[in-house]
Length: 134
Image 1 (cartoon, helix red, strand yellow):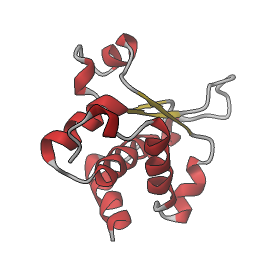
Image 2 (cartoon, rainbow, N blue to C red):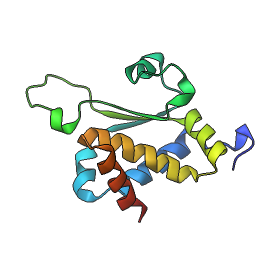
Image 3 (cartoon, helix red, strand yellow):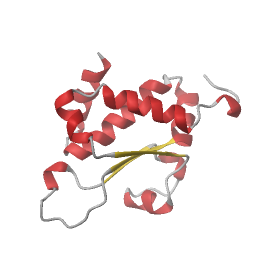
């Protein structure tokens, strides 16, 4: 467990962990994630927090922004590509507080947010997360 801020993994390390998590998703689903942009920043913006009904930037560790696959239409004009956001500081705080491996925390958030892209239920997301943990 990290105790010094200088020992905290940087944005690039988070990106590597997130990319590794995405690569563990089954190929039939992973190919449907090809257009998703993965962003790592320290905290969510006030607008992102408001979109999920939160005020404290330390409470949000990840966010999916986009139209879930089941809701997409070929008639939708010029949408921005979907994004999965990872918020580094809340994830680091959870890592320090819980002692759960950072790789596992990042994988959990990436799988959860990717599940939103597919329109999965929480149960489906849990099943997907179990499949990549094996």
